[in-house]
Length: 80
Image (cartoon, rainbow, N blue to C red):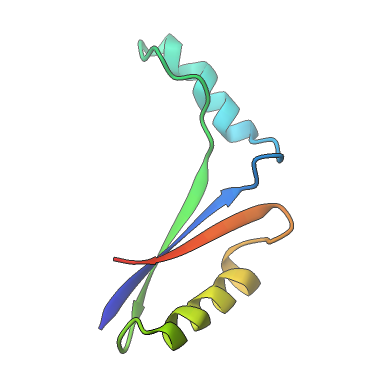
């Protein structure tokens, strides 16, 4: 059994209002030195078998069709 992570982030050219709200709030809470924040999503998938190239391709297809919106988001698949 293997675990795979899919990290999904908005593309750099897409505005991130939630990240901007967090960045504005940080100095008010006493956290200085943070210039920008981007908010994303993390998915952990547990595979029945090994995380071979075929399984990773299947996870990429899942990410493209269900976990991420490829028009506005990028994703990265990695094995834990």
